[in-house]
Amino acid sequence: MFSGFMVNAWVVATIVAVVAGVVGFFTVLRGSAFVAHAIPQAGFAGAAGASLIGVSTFAGLGAFALVSAVAIGLLGKRGRHDAMTALWLVFMLGLGALFLSWSQEYAAAVFALLFGEVLGVSTNQVLVTAALGAVCIAALVVLYRPLLLSSVVPTVAEAHGIRSQQMEMCFLVVVAVATTMSVPVVGALLMFSLMIGAPGAARSFTAKPLVALGLSVAISLLIVWISIAASYLTDWPVGFFVGVLGAVFFIGGRAWATWRRSDVGRGDEADSRGGAGQLEEVGQLA
Amino acid sequence: MTGMAAILGGIFEAGFFTSGPVRVALLVGGVVSLVSAVVGVFTVIRGQSFAGHSLGDLGTTGGSAAYLLGVNPLWGFITSAVIGALAIETFGNRRPRERDMATGIVLGAGLGLAALFLYLGTVQHNTSGAAVSILFGSMFVISSSMIPVFVALSLAALAVVALLYRPLLLSTVSQEIAFARGVPVRAVGMVYLLALAIAVSLSCVTIGAILSTAVLIGPAAAALRLTKRPGLAIAWAAVIGVTVTWVSTLLAYDSYYWPPAGRGWPVSFFVVTLVLIVYLLADLGSRQASRRAGARAMGGNDGRAGADGSTQPAESWVLGAE
Image (tube, rainbow over all chains, first blue to last red; front, side):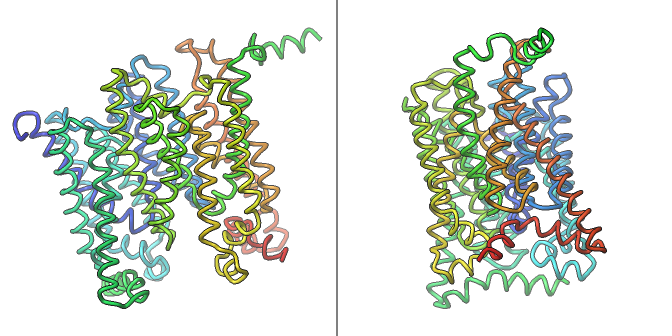
């Protein structure tokens, strides 16, 4: 399980898990799950187009992911962000379908891009993934305070001179970079499951942002490692284990939160405590 | 006269109206996009585009399970979409961001299961072609024997929206007011989500998951840019939805002779492109209209208020009507 080609799989999956845990933390905090779902799939259309004209699929994926991030950010500025995201997503998927209809052997390629092929990663790919992952993490370290503030209390952020529109755009670009690094190795669907499942579960355990962030990374790593091992043993797709484990951890977190609430016996007061605790922490940051 | 015939002949390639599959595609595509557009108006107003899209993707989970078991895929699509709707409503009933996250979790789990079912199906049937047709769908492969079932389920979804029209609108605009007037807000939301699940499953199984979201959100979002009255928006959405679908079917039929592949462009490409163009045009129109209104009311402030107000189009209407 740890020999030869499997080493690359473990390394690359670990990198992806860390990035997904960090980026996903902000995704869940901002309520941007739909965008996190849309951008990887848009990247898939780019990869299909690139393979059609003989360019590296990696470049096509990155270009489409970036263009989509900017387009969703600009077009969604007015009116309904989620409707615009849906329209852009289907437009990209439609383009992808068109590109695939032009190329020859499409079925297997679609399958690989949607569900990933973590077991066939080259050393070169590992290096690229690590570099892009480092860029994502560095960007989020720099943006940590303003992004957190504008995600949790946009009005306070504005008062501190943080433009929420700017923050939204920065965040979308980070999601696009995270997508570009992860989709070729783990697939569009799996990246999304990781980005929502782990942070969603982490939030049930603590209200402190930094602790939740750490927990999110830890759960994400746990999910990925268990999934690869299970996939190796059963030969079933990694995406299955990641998706289901994400939901299992989330439900576990929910159950734990409910149990603790009834244990403390503060009822609805505790329900709003999550938000209040975060506010407190953010207040100290500001 | 001959010139007219030549133009029509150029637009409608030979055999368009006599081809059996095209007739079925026009009929089923029309019905499905009509139902989706009507249901979609509420999806867009309620900010449930993500749920609407996810239910389609979740439908593919059931679709692939049905493929594995050898059952008619329609029942697989409907079963898993309904289960998905129940799960989303159970986990994400409190705040919008929580609903967003819960939808994401349910979607992730569903897609994981779909990956497994497709994998098992591929192992069993030794082809991944079925996976692609489940994911992308095709209008030209509908059997005419299924048409009565489609029509019956479509009518059921429309009936739910018609029966729930006022309480749904009221609880969408303001939960507090609806609650104060004795509307069972949660039950109404739940029943609506089930209608959405049925509408989305129908469109998914006939025209594929991509188009399902396109005809659900696109016409409705464009219509809500054109008018703020929900009743009118529903009518506009229906007209836009059916027109876009039919024009796309025609273009896809014509594209059989287009470069580069010489075997037709996918219908989905035409639908999503037309839908996006219609939405952007409607958006441009509404922006200019609100700018004019702003200029009339002297001062840009009113213009901006108008643009902001359009994010809650039903509000003034419902509250004004009471």
